[in-house]
Image (cartoon, rainbow, N blue to C red; front, top):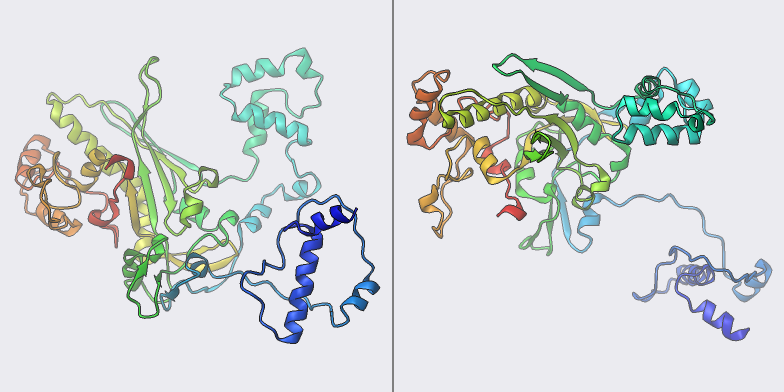
Length: 463
């Protein structure tokens, strides 16, 4: 028995061990003595111990007469930057991320749904109960079309279940009555072959990420610099907000505003190789303010599908011009999809953070994650040319970095071309001396603080 008790008390995370550490900390606090650095935290997460060791409070007071019950203290969360650099000196950007007033949170908007009264009675509404919701969730998230779902719901065995729906149309009606996120905006543009662009409102997507309750405490609202020494000699870089790029952007914004760096990512992919060779080109969006360890997890859903870029087959007699027309179409679609973010980058947008504070946010493009061929297309440069510098393929082995290809330089070169952009062949030939691709209106031309030489960040797996 004594050996069992001794073994139990020496376990590092049992309830008894935790109580003993609390008692030691309380006595040390009263006597003013200094605790050793190696002493464990007084409130570790206890293990599930099965030993029943009950102590009477009177016996404890006799053994430790100076023990008093500590008063409850309010727990204050550490600042995000302090958690990033607990062993360094942190300097925040003065006058950034000011809270203007308290507004409505995500849950407040959720409770504004017209069916809120039914949700309070039944949390699974419009479904009857948990089993009904699980069946609906399985059918809605499966790859079944409406016809197979109708066949499944018409089975005699399925008819014996107490479901609230008996047709696929009724099931989809239940799902559509739930509160929605950013909605798809369907548009069509007349071309030789009909092209469809499906997209969500880009600013709504940013707001959905900025005020999502899951990211509470996981978003940096102001740029900061971390120094490992008090002399400010050695910098420590971790999050995007700790870099010079975010600091420079914030210095160009009005005092009290919040910088919301936008991250875009797109990649053309094959959906089927046998049945028709279907291809999709999804465009994803995220926030650079979200902490790196959270954003890198797929389970965090930090990237939202914002658009499905169209893939058209142009009937131009010159094959090379088809790729030029593809680039024109891609930039034109990005202009449509990203227009709300450009406006917000000009004048700002008041948005709610995860705890309900209203902040005046600006949305420049912080990064566009893309492969090198598509990076050249976004930078509007010809093939075998660097998208971020003035180097061409003959200079790729040079030891020194070449002059950055800024957006201002590219736009200045485009203005010197005296040719009608609608004449694709002639305009492409006029762009060749500048090693430009023939796109006359880049999507980033009117996006403040967004320059291709900085937002075209390298992909580690492709460089």
